[in-house]
Image (spheres, rainbow, N blue to C red):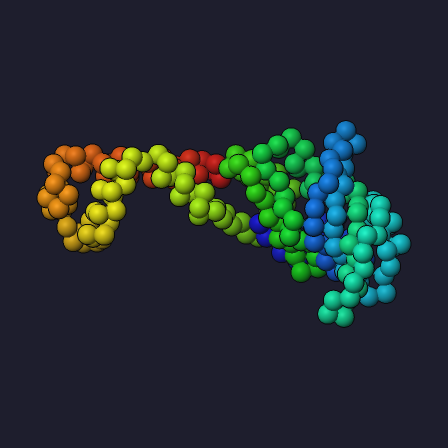
Amino acid sequence: MRYSPAAILSSNFKELFQIVKKVVLKATLYHEWEENWIRQVVEIILQDGKTLDDLSEVFFFEVETNLHQRRLNGDDVYTLMVQNSHDLVLIGKHIEDAVVMPGSEFGIQGATLIVRGAPSGVSNMVKGFKAWKAPTSISFVDTEEDNFAEMAGLLSESQSNVFRNAHSAGYYDSPRKTSLVEIARDLDLSRSTVAGHLRAVEKTMADSLRKRLDDIS
């Protein structure tokens, strides 16, 4: 999920980015939901002329410990343990099956949030972020191995075999390069058996797609 620089700098993040150029999430360590804050490890790059002491001016961003400092491309990069009580971190308060991942970053160049979890949890996170401020763009990326394992586990060996042969023979090309009769003859099966297997595969794919569309709507 992407927020433009204008969206970030017109929010109450503005006071933070008067002091820092960028914040990158490295880890989330602890949730204190009763007091509405979370403990995070972040990397920050300060604006020119600013110091860590200046962060005390940011009401939602309390530095607990300066863990490390290094030099990168002419900038000092600080690794900090912080208490973050910004409204955005509270979006996850009632969402147990999705998280904002390390690598998510905010800065004067905008923000990129990486969310992973169950489809329903990711959907709830996205709805929460939209309620805070409409993002510039949203991309949904699934792990191919997980998708394939989920889909393949619902198909029988016969269904998978018929589908592979039909696809290889051009049954799903436009125009079709083969027919159910030809596929049935090649596999020594009846036309009705081939048609039934392909309908089962197509329904499995359609059900999976519908579920994912419902999760993100």
